Length: 483
Ligand code: ADP
Image (cartoon, rainbow, N blue to C red):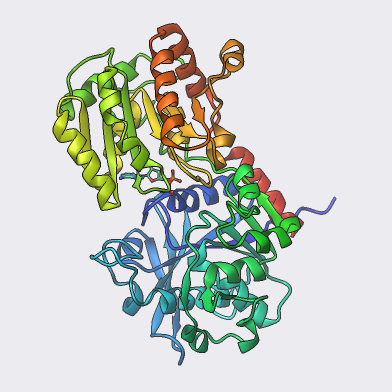
């Protein structure tokens, strides 16, 4: 029998945990290649050469020097990370020698060179995958989100049919839209600026380029794959995505079970597991102490670990803080984002200093401590492509209270009477996402918590949930093979 050929895949993405991260995209790009390696697929990750990325590459070597008229001088640096990822970084200091948020400047506005920068990034990535730079030709170019959206256009323009392209949409809200004058500097045929190409309402959209020119499109949960093909959830792309319906699949994200493991996590106060869950209570009391919350093992401690945006429905939650405190609950929040939401939570913490703790910022160790110490996590998202915090939460026996949208619908089993009776419940879902339904979901959570046997059953169900990558990695491998 002939041996099955091992596919070689180039991931193209702007973030990758643990090198550079602003959200779930980084987690996926950092974990999926390792799961794919176990499933028999070789992945190299192509990243922008941000200082943190270059510093995190071990045994770095220069793969190629790039001198072209349509971009700044640059080098390709290849190597591996401590976590075992194969990396190629585009070391172009003019574009990527920046600290802080990769997309936003210090005032919170889009960086002015985002269009030119990610076009260049995608062009070089396409040339690498095609074997025009470096010696290796790849079978699959797998682009992630708008930052890599143009890759498929460059591959198409090269005329090859050997290199297959996939776009994964992690969040349709980020569309990579730029003024049309950018088109002249992209080095693509002018005919690509059309309704069937990357033109979008008189602008250029990098995400639309990915949607139109990729051989296949995936997104990160089955429910979101349907939502983005609707007029409501399509954010302007619903019709285009419906037209490509035969080439869209929704493959659920997982999390890295080594990074998120309450048995071995060095960041948390006490280790625990499904078999031996007692340590979770120790994490709660240590967290209450560290955050200067009233020490009380019986007060339900809710957490939020999130971008503070209306997508995440946290404006709705900000209005519920008095109610939660009146019912005897506590809140520990970590996140940053819209200033109105930050202000509302800061005011609530000032009003209830022993019951509400607010940390504005990004803090990886604290995120782990919150997941380990809290009883429940709020994710009242208005839309949620997949969501990773509910998966991390379940891994840590923290019960998710979620809007019934996207991947939250696919990964959390609502504590309905039937699910409770069957011992299947892993959380609380509510729909539609509005203040009224969030209020009733919170009331339901208090009710469930007041019955310790019932609550402990839900916690155990969460701890036993399979939230890793194994199943989806096999699905991606099969998808690559089918292309
Ligand atoms: P997003 O839409 O932001 O990508 P996800 O739920 O898919 O949301 O992924 C968010 C990831 O970022 C999770 O790993 C979560 O723990 C992490 N995260 C979000 N906000 C913070 C923060 N302020 N500090 C530390 N980690 C955070």
